[in-house]
Every structure is written in structure tokens, then in C-alpha cells.
Picture 1 (cartoon, rainbow, N blue to C red):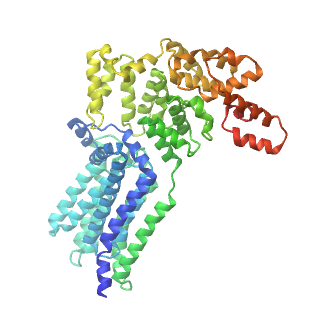
Picture 2 (picture 1 turned 30 degrees about the horizontal axis):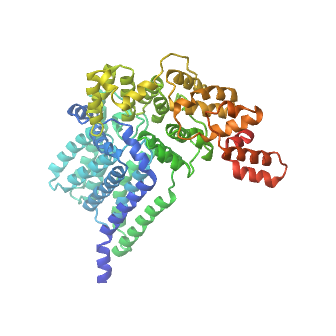
Picture 3 (picture 1 turned 30 degrees about the vertical axis):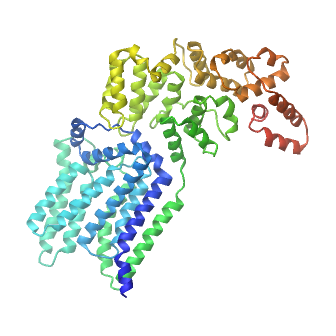
Length: 592
């Protein structure tokens, strides 16, 4: 019995430790990129004005706290650690309150239910991290209320806490009110029952009236948001069923704790062991049943584009990826930046020629949409898409990734006064202030000083020097104008030449090979060799005419073997053809 008693004593700390590890594994393995992406969707400013602005609307304090911590999500490991730690704090706050109201061995299990629920919600970017802060503060307020012994002071504190929480955490005041009512009813004796019932009725009435008063005199918002605020869900006019369930979960577990405490048939040891098993079982199910979603993989590629890890994108693409336009765009962008688009495109299975994202009339314009234009030299189009991302954000926050891009494009266009608007905001951030301050100093010194830095000089050289009518379905025309503006624009050349090869437009391909000498390739792009070798079979003498593009003897031998296998009717030879040449331009010409 003593051994069992000792085991039970350590169940709670062991379970908490193991749950923390499980949470870390869950976020790190499956949703680390989505956490990092949250940081790109906001621009947190470390100023008193920014803080005060948040205090001027209901739920603003928890929104401010969430934004403060989300700025550290820029570093993936910090995002995982912070998200895991906050959810474990939610467990501690829930357990601490439950123990004050109704001591029960099953409180360990019940306290993890909100953690499980909100962990799942946070995998969706529409649900805010502010909810975790709101629930933690709510439970701390509820515990404070319960700990006050004098009923008059307790009632007065309850009213003050409800009002404070309404303004600081929005809709969580509803949870606090229900927890106060339940704690009063559960802990009251017969003599105090009537008094507590009157207090409960008055408290619930106040909870109905407070938002109506605030809506009438302090702000003008929808009735729904007057009660709940926009701190929990990014679409302010909605309050999803999942959030309603989480809100009701807190009073529900108080009731469950009270009722199961009355079950004398269950021993404390059984309750403790069953809590341990069930909690660990749920964590195992969450980890094992969760897989890398298409959205998470797209975030992974998008984050690598943001940090310009081009080689890592290419290496990862070779392991396979889902059919997603943002992923295709990231891979093509990485190949073009590394000068490998015309030598590796067909070697990456299922890669599609997505060179830009079409304009979307619904939803937020993806942050990655401006990147290919910026790196190509189409600065105005990059600026347009970055501005679209800002204006189409659901929660009307300034995405820091778009703010940086807008600042860059306005600087390159010489519109320094507009660039300063974004740079001054970035100057107030924690991780972008150094770059913003340096850029402000450079534009203050003038364009000549600015162009001494490769970051700006290279982009300036690649910019268009003439106007043209843009057609989203004819991106190759934009690449032609870019090459006319700067004949060394390697990125534009890669995009253009691959497009012409995919369209099987050999005349245009040969025509624009005139820019080849300006690109300073270390070795001839493989698909240039294969295309010239093929055209040679149609128009003998082409290889000699374009002798500045070296076609290796190996390529000549390969096309001869390819032709032999292609012209046979033998099924085995056709299988050999696919096995040996599926990643060549020749195979694309005939079979795709």
C-alpha cells in the first residue's frame, strides 16, 4: 500500500513533465512552420503608443501579450517552446482553480481537457494565441475570487474582476462569471445558499448589461463582438462552434469534478492511474494521428523563401511534395535564383511551371506572391502584391513580411518618404530595427550612398527601364522586357528560356540564346544542350551555328540512344526509355 501511495504521489509531476514533452514533440514535428508563419502576419512595435492603442479596445491586453510573444516565433524553436509552455501554464491554472473548488484525483485529467482542445484550435491560424492568455488570466481571477473568505469582499472583488476581465480579455468574462457562480453554489452551506443565489443572479444580470453599456458609450461594434471581442478568432464577425465548446468546457469540468468526487466507488489510486493513462493516450493519439498537412508543408517552403534558403528548398523538393501552387512557385523560384531552372526542372518529380500566383479576389493574398516579381526585377508588381497582402489581411494587422517588401520597393523606386512610413514601424520592432535604421540612414544620405550596397545596387540594375502592358498569362513577355533593360538578368533569362522550352517554341528559344554569353554559366544548362541536340536532328548545323553553347559528346550519344528506343515498337524498349530518360527534355517533348 505504501508503494502504491508513493507512486500516486508522483503521478501529477510525472504526467506534467511527460505532457510538456508531448506538446513540444507535437508542435516541433507537425506545426513549427505554422507557428513561425504567425510571426510574419504581424508587426509588433515596442512602443508605449502601440501598447496604449491595445488598451483602448476590449480584449486588447491579451492581444498585446500574444503579439509580444509571437514576435519570438521568428525563430522556430522559440515558437515551439513558447506555445508548449503557455499551454502547460493553462493546465496549471485550470488545475489550481479546480483544486480550490473541489479536490478530486480526476482534476488532473479534467485540467488537460482545455489544453487538448485549444492545442487543436491553434493548429488553425485563424484562432488566436490571445485565447490562451485570456483563459489563464480568467482562471487566476477565478482562483483569487474563491480564495477570499469574507463573502462581502468576495462579492465586491467578483464584480471588479468581471469588469476588468471584460476589458482586458473580452469574452472570457463569461467564463469567469460562470466559474464564480458554480464555485459559490458548490462551496456554499445551507445558510449561505440563498445569499449566493441572489449574488449569482445579480452577477449574471451584470454580465448581460456590461457589454450593452460598453457598446452604447465606449465603442460601436456588433452585438456579438460587444460580448466576445475579436481576441479569439481572426474573422471578427464570427465565433465558431469550436470556440463555443472551449468556452463551455471550463464550467463543464467544474461540474464534472464535483460530480465525480461524489463517486465513492472509485478509489483515489484508480482515479490517478486512469488520469495518467488517458492523458498520455490522448497525447499519443494526437502525435501519431497527425500528419504533415499540405498547408504546413506550404508554410515550410514559404518560410524558406522568406529566409532565402534556396539550396535547402531544392534539396527538400527532391524528397517529394504535395501538389500546391505556393510550393511549386517556391521551388521554381529557388531553381531560378541558383541558376538551375534550365538544368533541374524535369529532374524534380511532378514539378509544375508555376512562376507566379494568380490574383485572388477572395481571402488573403499569399505573402509569397510578391517574391518572384521582386527577385526578377518587376518591382512595381512586387509592390502591388505586397500591398494586396496588407489590405486583404483578415484581422487588419500589418504583416511584417509585407512591410519589409513595401519598404524595399519604395526605396528602389526612389519614393523615400513613403518608404519611411514602413521603416519607422520596423524601427520599433525587436528583430528588424537594425535593418530599418540602417536603411533610413542610407536614404537620408541619398541614392548614391544607397547604391554602394549590393543588396540595393543589384536590384536597382535589374529594374525595368521601359513601360509595357502586363498580361498575367504572358509572364515571358515581362521577362523579355527585363532582359532588354539589363542583359545580365540571370533570373529573367532562366524563367524566359524554360518557358520557351516548355512551349516548344524553338525559334524564340534560338533567338534569345543571344543573351547566353552575358549569363556567365559555369557549365551549359542541361536542357539547352538537350534542346540544341534535338533541333540538330531537325535542322542540321544548328549546333555549329550556336557553338558558343557547348553541347557535350555525352548528350549527342544520349539522344542517339533515345531516338533508337523511341522509334522501336518493343514494349521493353519503351519501358527502358521511360526509366532512362523520363527526366530529360526529350521525354517531355514527346510524352508530356
